[in-house]
Image 1 (cartoon, rainbow, N blue to C red):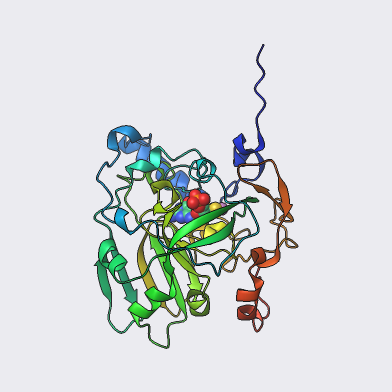
Image 2: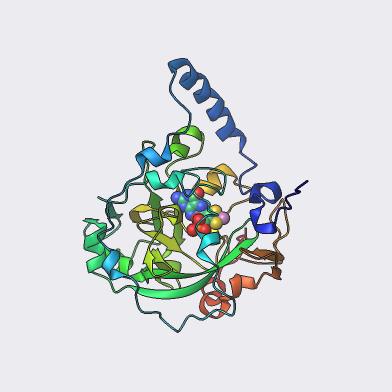
Length: 327
Ligand SMILES: Nc1nc2c(c(=O)[nH]1)N[C@H]1C(S)=C(S)[C@@H](COP(=O)(O)O)O[C@H]1N2
Ligand SMILES: [Mo]
C-alpha cells in the first residue's frame, strides 16, 4: 500500500492559517441577503472553464525581458523555484485556494488601461504598453512575507512606484495613494462566486511610502512578463509589509487625502489594519508571526522586523504615535 505523505509545501495554507476565516457581521449579512436574490434570479455562481477561456494572445512586452538586475537589493536566501511561487498564489478574484494558476489564465491582460486620477495636476489614462515605454525596467530580488506565515524570494522585474508618482504630479494636499484591481467577473470567477467580498480589491500607501525607494511596481518575474496568477500585467510589491498590501492587476492609481478602507480591512477589520508592517513580535489574532515557512522547503525560519528592510523604511514611522503599525 502506498501512503502519500504531504510535504509542508503541498499542504493547503488554509489548513493552517487562512487569511480569511473571519468575515465581519455586516459583510455576512449582506452576503446572505444577496444570496437569496441571486438564487432567486437563477444566476450561475459556479466556476467557468479556465482552459476554454484562456487568452493565447502573445504578450507585446515580451522583448523587454529579462531586464538588468539592480544589485543594490541583495537577499541572503535562495531564490524560490518558480514551480512553487507561480503555483501557490493568493488571488481571491480567482479562488480562495492557492491552486488557481490555471483558473487565472482567464485574465485578459491586453488591452489594459491604467487610470491615474484624484488630486493630481492632470488625470491620465494610458495603456500598459505606453506606460512601459516611459519607464526603465530593472530586476530586484526581494523577500515576500504573507501574513499567513509563508515566504518566498523572487526576482521581480518592474520599476519604482515613484515613477508613477512623478508621472501623476500629485498636488501637495494628496497624502495617500489608493491602488485598485480590475472589476470584471467575466474574467474573474471569484468575483462572482465570492460575491460577498468588497470588490474591487483596494490597497493603499501614504505618499512617503509610495515614494520610498523599495516600493516597486512589478511587471514581470524570473526574467519574463508577469504570470497572470501573480498579478499581470502590473502589480505592487511592498517587501516590508505583509503580502496582502501588494495589490495585483492594478487598473487605477488615485491620489487623495483620505486613508483607504482597504479590501482586507473591510473583510476583517480586527485582523488587517492599514499599516500591516511585518513584525515577528506582534502575533496575528489567530496565529504567531514569529517564524515563516519558506516556500518550496520544509524549513521554518525566524521572521524579521520590517521583513529585514528596516534600514530603508523604519524612519518613515518614527513620528507616528497611537496607531497600530503592525496589524
Ligand atoms: N487583487 C489581489 N491582489 C492580491 C491578493 C488578492 O487576493 N487579490 N492577495 C494578496 C496576498 S494575501 C498575497 S500574499 C500576494 C500573493 O502574491 P503571489 O500570488 O504572487 O505570491 O498577493 C496579494 N495581492
Ligand atoms: Mo498574503
